[in-house]
Length: 241
Image (cartoon, rainbow, N blue to C red; front, side, top):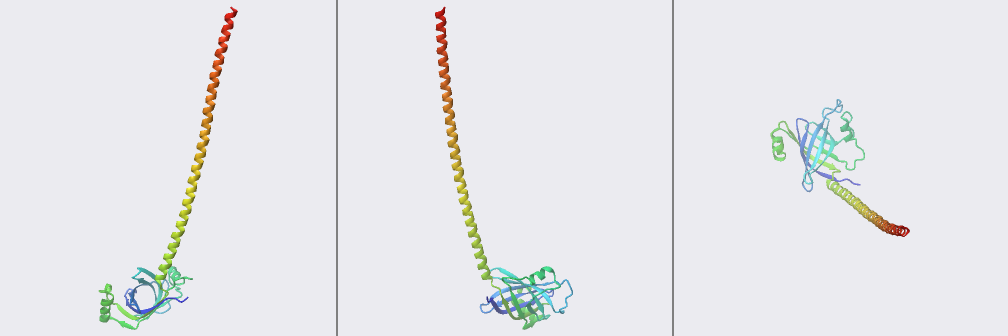
C-alpha cells in the first residue's frame, strides 16, 4: 500500500546545544507543522565522522494537536542534511529500540537538504520573521530547503483510533447489556425462590395452626370425656352408699 507523501519547504534553526527547531510548510495547501529535535548522546565514540549525530525529531501537527517522533541522522555541520537511520549501534538501548523497531504500522521517513544557509545578521532576520520564539539566542544558524515526510497521516490514525474506540464502546455496551440481562434473570430467580419459600412457609404455618387447633380440640374433648367419667363415677359411688 502506497504511503502518504508530503512535500514542502522546511525552515530549521540549528542551535549551539545541538538541538534543532523550526517548521515545515506542506505544499500545496501551506499547512504548517512544527519541528523540534534533540541530539541523542552517543555512549561510545562515534566513528562516522565529526559531522554525524542522531536527532530525536518530533513532528507536530498544530491542527489536530498531535505529534509523532522519529529518529534521524544529521550530517553536514551548518548545512544540515536529515535522513532516516536504520541502525544506531553505540547509542543507548532505548535509542536502538526506537530505530530498529520492526513491523511499525505508521513508520515515518524524513528527508531534508539545506539549500540556503543563513548566519549572523541574515540568520537573525530569518529567526525574527519565521521563528520569533528563538529571538535573543546567539550563534544560531538557519537552514532553508526542501523536505519530504513519508508515512505521516494523523488523520487516518485518528480515524482508526475513533473506530477502535467506537468498537470498544460498542463491545462494552453489549457486555453491560448482557450483564444487565443476567442480573435481571438473577433478580427474577430470587423473586421466584422467595415466593416459593414464602408459600412453603405459609403451608407449614397453616399446617401448624391446623395441628394446634386439632390438638386443642382433642384436649377439650379429652377434658370433657374425663369430666363426664368423673361425674358417672361419683353417681355410682352415691348409689353404692
